[in-house]
Image 1 (spheres, rainbow, N blue to C red):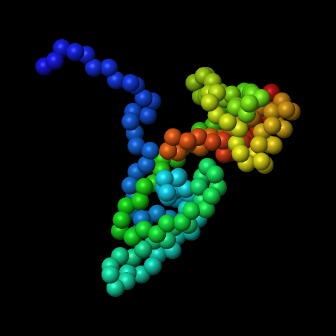
Image 2: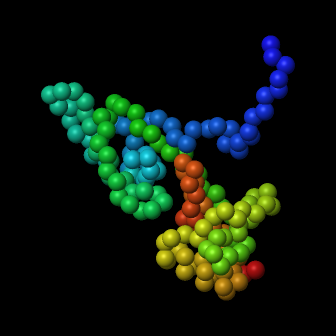
Amino acid sequence: MSDEEHHFESKADAGASKTYPQQAGTIRKNGHIVIKGRPCKVVEVSTSKTGKHGHAKCHFVAIDIFNGKKLEDIVPSSHNCDVPHVNRTDYQLIDISEDGFVSLLTENGNTKDDLRLPTDDNLLTQIKDGFGEGKDLVVTVMTAMGEEQICALKDIGPK
């Protein structure tokens, strides 16, 4: 065998896949699906009957979970679709910088400074107003396919 040592870059996700396969016929409304490379939440599913040439088809109408765009896809119900791993994590809001980034406190006491303020105007004003009033805010960060975004806000009382 060779004498040289091998060095590997360490990754936090241990090389886990961003998606997993699931049969199209088993994906339901309010589930998640990847359409055109974007993680989406399914808002409508309709299944057509098998035709002269074979497969029943599933027609998915879904909304991108990060930018809110409506996407559609038609897949044979026996085929596999990619389903994104969607995680939600709560962080306490520490600070908002002038350039639109937030500073968050993680479970283990570290800070997370690489996240932008949300693009949703309603959520944005709630965060800025609450922070300006000195409230203790907990933001929910949704993560899927290497993207992260603040998607919800909880007020846990004054500081």
